[in-house]
Length: 166
Image (cartoon, rainbow, N blue to C red; front, side):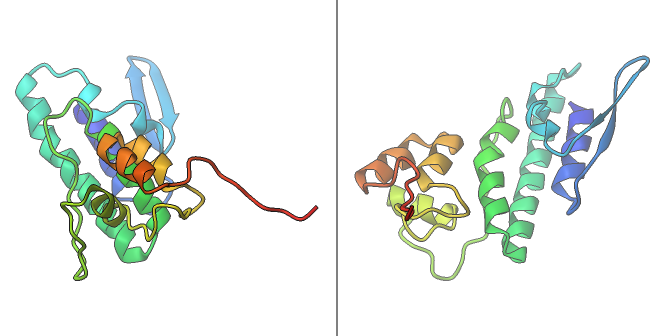
């Protein structure tokens, strides 16, 4: 768990493609890529003391929140949306809530599931694509059933369609 936290910290705080040398066994050294941390999450690690898992939960949450805010500050909404949709995976097997992001001054009615989801993902419309991804795909990758239902009620696009003149 602790080594996985170190790898996640390297990825979440770096603006470059993070490569990490990983010692798998006594004599095995592997170079892992920037997205390998998605497969070996901190919460799925082996802990000799179960209390350590909970101590690391707050660290993982802070790392994810830090990354989300850096992406928002830089205007990288695509990276923000991807990180937000992965957040449930990064927090898997850890007893913690999903990350909180800074609220903007023009915050909508967050009691409305559709408005809340659109705001959280920084989307303008339930029917328009953002960075090549439809909102419904983002909601499903986040595992947010309420948002999926709200998007379907709002007639969100369920597939990519293009009109091309041949």
